[in-house]
Amino acid sequence: MSRLTGPRVKIMRALGLDLPGLSRKSIEARPTPPGQHGQKATRKRISDYGVKLKEKQKIRFNYGLTETQMRRLIVDARKGKAPTGESLVQLLERRFDNVVFRAGFAPTTIAARQLVTHGHFLLNGKRANIPSIRLKVGDVVSIRSKSKQIPIVVDSIKEPSLTRPEWLTWDAQQALATLAHYPSIEDVPFEVDLQLVVEFYANRV
Image (cartoon, rainbow, N blue to C red; front, side, top):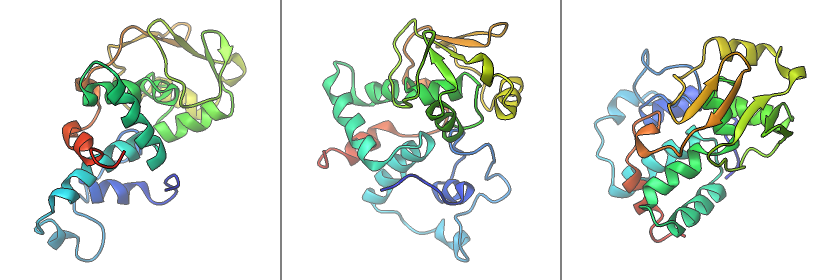
């Protein structure tokens, strides 16, 4: 499955919650699923498969991942000693593009990925343009001097979409973020049942 290119709010309405990595907009004004039968749809019973699929889609769309990437992350998460759900959160939150977003350099994960791909950021002082790089404790993310005046970056630093997490140390004077420690399940910025996500892939990878 390719990356999302359609209406983002429509996706959030279908999933029933705001996804900060997908869009700065909110479904508060229109919380029902999209379509002419949206209000009736909330009364329909969802199958066990549908419930698990919905939780998985929350993760996939918020972090802007393809299905192939999700499966690879699940495989890697299973290799760790920690519970799969906990390991999955660490792998997701430590992605280079997500750290750029959570540090407040970009309004969404999608925007962060584009900025990273175009080479606007430095990782430990060196230019890096691979969004999927997994950061380690002590890694420092900063923006290139030539890129500091990009309007979307300036606006995001002034007013980040989310409060910067405590697992990131933010230096406002130099505009750089340091990974202080690995994130935990509580650091996921939206409501999701990770156990159901793990169960969804139980017999699929």
